[in-house]
Length: 473
Figure: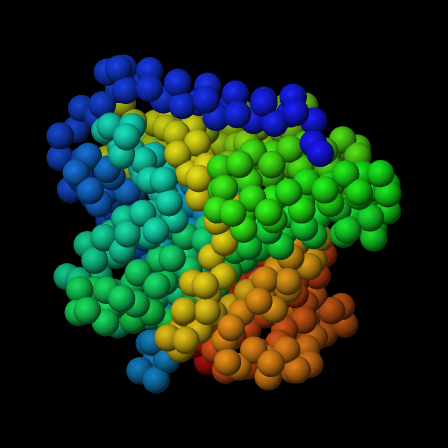
């Protein structure tokens, strides 16, 4: 069994965060901009648009849409749009996905060579509410489940798409990373239902799950055996970790999701101890030493959302030429100044601490059924995973894949893989892929949790294939 003191610390953290959130309700932080729900902005040339949608009374989602300069007008292959959903839960797509991974500019405000804007228009959303520039006027309005987050996102899509024929002509592909994958599959189902009911005018092109937290049981069960195989953990650590992983399995079977969230924290701490602080996002490194790194000393005291976000905060500190400012300073400085519409008393990440505690009861809930439902609806589903990711390991992804009830699964599993290379360099294998009907899997070599950062070239090629993006002649 795990150390009870660690178990207690996890509960104390959640309780303390909850008490802080109660105190925040009393603070006069509410936005001074009364019409924030309708606020919108954009560049003079129309290449960028952004704004707020009040998805529920006093609950506001912030979005940012980039139109690609590489657009190709091809009636047989309409130009796609990618909606990017970040992980955490509580990671900012507008901040991390945009500037940290795949948007047109990096944290230096320099052009990104492998921006996904080359293959599609890009829509970033700070979701769920209270993430990034999104906010709530009452802390009780934060979401508590994946389904609630998906409902808010569906409301946002209705606001953006139903009155915009240009957007309606562009198929939407929902791409996600980490916990964002749970949001993506629940949003996919919600969007399909709204489309079928005539409530949402949108063409859903597909859903792509990058290193996604679809089945927490399968991922946590994979951690210690994987680390043992690569000589990172001892037999003692393996046995103790497997004991907690089995405890998690039983808790999930009994529907004790908050207890499973606590056990998740216990298991992370134990594996950190017995691996001498392995990086959960790239097991080839110590925590704090990977190219996308977090603060080693503080990392083990943080919850999953904070650990995830701190990777990008450190990346911003390392890469930014803006006086070595953090991502938070960057977003609340030049980016906020550019956007102009952020309410006076709303800061990027100011409410982020509310999200994970509110979702503690859903954090460990699996979403395999939603993947099955999407496949049954003939929605294209792509799974892509970094080879050296630990927290959402490829072993874990393959394990939950085998649990699908999709009637074409046996045929998919019988398919061999195709090696992939970066164009112009057909020597080094960058990835493998396999596909059948409306399901595809990509094994991205030498990438950890953050595939677009660690293997940008092959990631961009993969995006072009998934979205069927038309190419210039």
